[in-house]
Length: 533
Image (cartoon, rainbow, N blue to C red; front, side, top):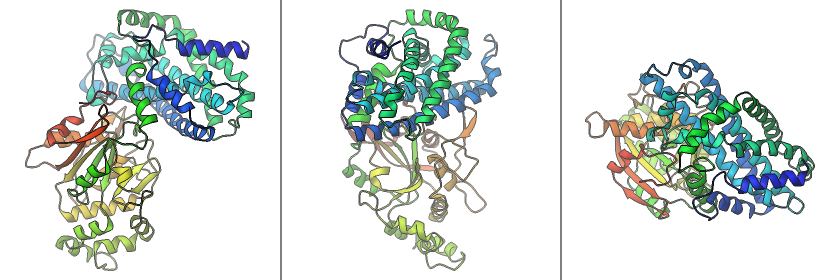
């Protein structure tokens, strides 16, 4: 197919949904994409490279899930007349929730760049080339893994009912599985796969001209496109007719169907607006943060959510992130250095330091220097958290100026909290754990930092927060911290007390102070539901 014809074919498919939209207005995904293409070349390429790094993580996450599915294949092949056990249901739902997370996140990237066809390749080669790489890279990832999963799960009545039911605690909206099938088993997206593969080969001179071929991760995405396209086409040739037949009845019966999975009218609208228009403008204000800070103490545990930055993709639940509050160096000293039990403990440590903060400074001189400095916004360091850059010291702008923030206080002595802070200092500087492996201390995910800082040992009671099975691995979504808080609320032996909850209001563009009752319920909110209560 000539390059011009391929481009026209792609444009027709990208611009025309498989069914007429409910309204003639452009989708929010298209609006968001237009905003991305309004960036200058340098900013656009920088954003594209960041999104490509995210796409690589999502692709690796999906590949890992496929391996876990293979290991549990017997559950998927179980006779549908035999009811699933609670453990089997948990395995199936956590795997599906993680899979759903990765697919939707990948679709957000695809839609963000899918208007590349409207960008002239002659006058704007960089935007056209990079836009294609992101769009087609995301599409091939979705189809390869989506068709593989659909082939295994489709047509199994008990399983489809289970996966289609709303499960807010796992971040699953109603009819998620039906819409997933609608997205991946569709002639329009399949035709885009074939058209895009042909256009990729014709685009290589432009990729060279745009300087994209030698950029980080571009060789990876080109190879990923090739491998994923091979898998997808193989499934379509082998089982395509069957897959399409299975999906046809569901699509016909669903009068509220959308052309592009839940992203088209809901998630893309929400994420498109927030990721493009509201980056750097969180719902929680500095004034609200300072008001909450007056109630906080070193050792407090925070859970946080940013609507445009979905960390921990692949883990279920409304709350994606956890952090450990340590306060400023002055607050840390005031809280621990005058406590009799802490002083007695410190006196037994090597070198007999005069105070807990002196022990931290002598044991971790480089870290202490970083901690006693300022963040990029000129604010004091107050938080230790594990982010993509690793276990880091951060300030309120990064750790607390988010869209939703909950603060809980461990019902432990200051001595135990001092031991937890000491552990956290030990972990500071270690890489982020993208594999969510709680059995290794060399890399840590956000909740792992909090969990291991407060883990029970012979020297401290700590906190008892059980790990859970997510897609066959033992881990701890941040949502589980709030679930424990809710389950133990009001009990004499509760482990956590309520401190504060700043509840974002996306529609109003602000956040409100909410009470413990609202915070208790928050972990039940659907992860991808834009109409948050």
